[in-house]
Image (cartoon, rainbow, N blue to C red; front, top):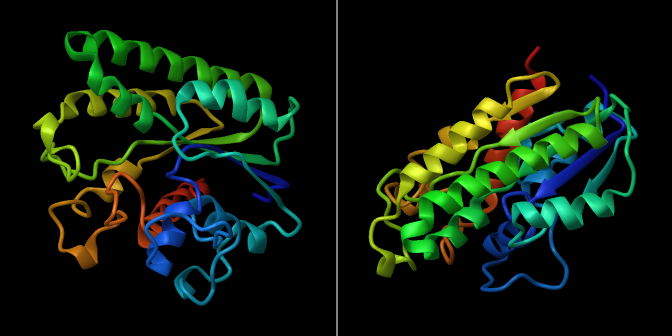
Length: 240
């Protein structure tokens, strides 16, 4: 299918910041970013770095398609609902729109401080996600919407560099959230991009060369990770 507009909603799983840091060997994102994030690569591939995807980006398969990348570093579900969608600016029943959504990870990380209320807080996060998806479906009623699961850089171990003081992370809540994302992607034109499943084995248990996360903060994708998120999106869009 040819698309006229690509809208990227969500958090740092979609943006250029950390893939740029990875490629340039920087500790912090520079003022000028390279278009190496998952959303940028889905829109237009970097032919030099990723020749495997030559001719497979939206710019090639849908000539004239525009990109509106609204994803923000650190974004939560509430940020997408109240800020990113507001920047979208209008409702549309255009079937030529494709939307990727990467959200939930920051909400779940924030919930870790809830202590005994963690179960209650995660239930609220899942409810907010449901409302967000419904809002997107109302505002972009005929758009192809890709719901993206949240990856697990601990590879099922629950142990993450930088968060050792928390002990083993309660991954059952990540699993619960991702199962909800999978269930939400059950009605056309909503599709599931199961990044969580694709990324398993490429986190803390893998040799550094095989990790798909930025080594300075393993909750962020590195350049390869961004490309692999893009890979999952492309595979989903190619499904009939």
